[in-house]
Image (cartoon, rainbow, N blue to C red):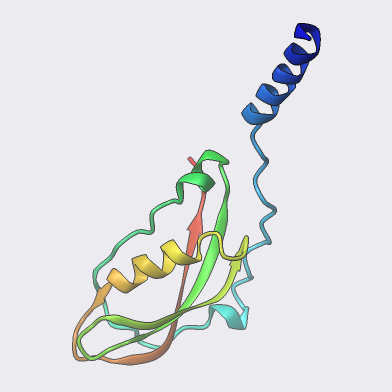
Length: 123
């Protein structure tokens, strides 16, 4: 009985310790890509919040990127934040949206259909 249990326990322990490799990341769209268009003469950023790296992505050294579209309200807040494209899909979307919603732009200059990208690189 001990001879059977010990090898099974070793295999289970090794499987639990194994780390999964990072997900495949698509290349970031080129500079001429329509996905990277942004609003003209965007107001100055007066408060910038950086997205937090998700702990599970950090542990796997997972890179990625997110392109967001948003409007700027008259009070300078980013509104209607949505994901245009991301890679790996959905992994960094939530943290990128949360960070952009904390940004503040110069008030009194509303804009529609602005875009920004966040790129995530493990350190």
